[in-house]
Length: 152
Image (cartoon, rainbow, N blue to C red; front, top):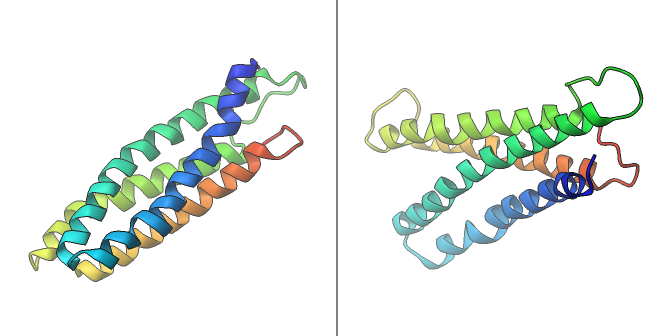
């Protein structure tokens, strides 16, 4: 594999993990510490509206680079498409699609008193999915930078 592709493959997950950790532990708590709850919720909602497409993009990039790496391996065996980075990237895609794109419209309805679940319940599900995504991306980061050079 070319050096450029390998460098991008190794750097993307750690940078992505840093973004998610920063959002979770720095950017999200700050508005709630300084603004009224409704205003803080709007600020945080705006951050997650930017984070979701970024996560989709980065998951696809990791999937493409990992597939390219497995196809370029010189071991002579047919490369399995189901490596750990591929599965973790698919998990992050699922968490993003469900946690943001599926739940956000339901949360808007719940704020109006509509729907089967309350805003708090939907928020808890969304938070759980973001946590799973964050753990999956951190695991991707560990796999990407481990010294063996292999990320299976």
